[in-house]
Length: 185
Image 1: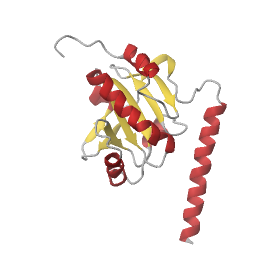
Image 2 (image 1 turned 45 degrees about the vertical axis):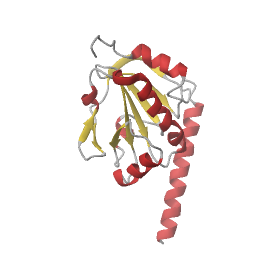
Image 3 (image 1 turned 30 degrees about the vertical axis):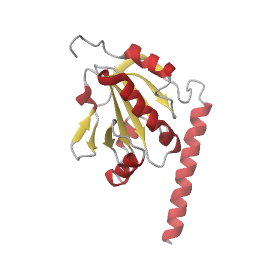
Image 4 (image 1 turned 60 degrees about the horizontal axis):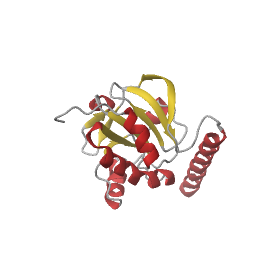
């Protein structure tokens, strides 16, 4: 019986992932992997996650910076492809931008730490969301989903699906949204 339950769970997971991808691709307003600005920026929901070190990490910790809040999982193929580009983006845009990569893996740090080590991802700020509260709070239709949050905590737009975060086009878009860097910073 346990084997049947596992197979059913896998089939449900595959069907929901395919369904979410089909829904995204059929929505004319969504361009997979592209930044879509919101018409009117609204405050991002207050969210807090456990960090890899067990200490809480929240959006509020990054006031004054542009934040890319990325929902991902180690089992999500588009997520795996985009994670290195998120790492390169943060390295390229430096102190005015932070990537908060929130893992939706149910296994938490036990699953995420080996993944990060395997792909040498050490610049990203990692949040753990094993109960998927962020997916529900943000009404994400699939993984990966990213929100771009301004230095005052307002959502400027989102990206659904995998993106090339370190592409010249994406860097240009995000650079325009970053806070001005004051001398001496």
